[in-house]
Length: 127
Image (cartoon, rainbow, N blue to C red):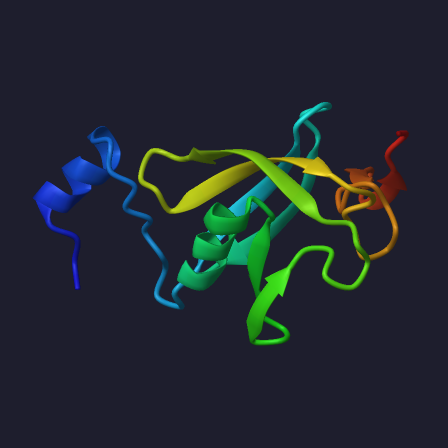
């Protein structure tokens, strides 16, 4: 169903939080470290994950591979405490500014973005 002009205006110019989920019921979430401002990870949120994040102050996501709600750090203890939620102009993506309790990447790296593309190959980023 196409978005009405009124809803578009409310999303883009108003004060209401009206998240715009994609056809799979997801929106993109970028996690940024509160202290360093480094990007820690990118994940997806459905309505349940968004609601749990807002309710608890701990980052929750929709795990596409598991097909369920996933709290970051549920097994490792490396939770992400949300300091603020930034919402983009059309409300289809958010940035979670977080304090991390440890490494964010499942590989044990501080950030999932620990490599850069250089000359057609991946090179480790100095941290």
